[in-house]
Length: 173
Image (cartoon, rainbow, N blue to C red; front, side):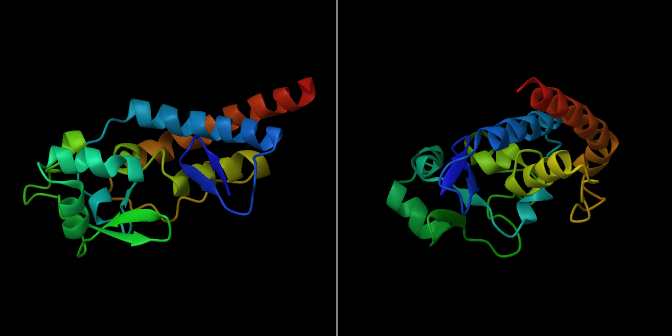
């Protein structure tokens, strides 16, 4: 199983071919740009997503942030699916406060920092749009998320620019 940037799992691949790596870099750049120009508005919408992943290397850090041992944190807040940890939750993340704010903001997992721009679902759609020359499918995004209009306003232009860069790279090889 290949991993891109040590976090995006590319199932069915043992390694990433060079052209695919360049295309993934283009998609990542689009996603990273959107992430950088749209800081989190702390709306709490992402805290209701079905799977909030905690990477192995984050377990100790978050437990420490909460003043818990690693084992206590795992027992109380996590469960294992395949090779990843997921937050136990009932409809929303257990760390979403009544005020709609994250109670572990400074210690939150990377997926929470990345959402929605640098998560696999969005990144894969940007990648496919760049490579296939198709419109990006954003039908899964809810219009009441503050980040959705920002994405919809900028992503097509950014993808068009990435396609041009891709064409130049292909011609130069």
